[in-house]
Length: 135
Image (tube, rainbow, N blue to C red; front, side, top):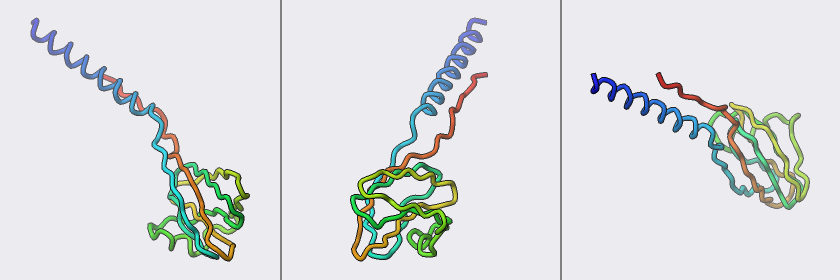
């Protein structure tokens, strides 16, 4: 009888501990991703696939951000022009925030006669809090 109570106590304790670990891990913010892309004159480059929130910055004029359907082809996904109606011009020395939905890729496009740098940072969309309930 004592052995059964001890086994139940251990299992219950382990279940509650696992629930705490799972909840704590779910409460952690998603990892940030960041980088720099050099966009050649009059061309487009893929930045990152969604779903995420993208913050983009350039010290130069002539860059715009647009979304294209992600097919896993990298820069080729952006070469078709994407959704030109949703093209967002980046203002010099300003941060632009763009929501990139699932199934799309954020693209950077240059309208300049020289290469332009784009600095970016992204955060994955919040997936909500996951709770584990011990039996």
